[in-house]
Length: 77
Image (cartoon, rainbow, N blue to C red; front, side, top):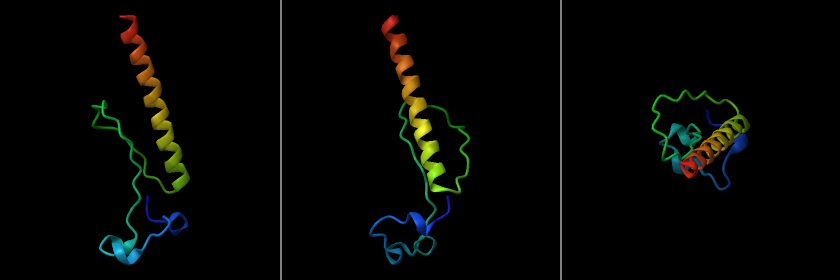
């Protein structure tokens, strides 16, 4: 998502990061999924920080659910 001063991190100094869009870099939501082998995941462009947070949390919940299913399948085999 594009930079939004409404969500500026505490202590952020735009001068320290002026090489990155004048201290206003794009915000990127990330999730670590070491077992994910998919490379073609379609990710929507976020325009609102709260929406990005919700999508990230939904991803975590889905991954946790899938991991639980996989673990149960391994236990049953």
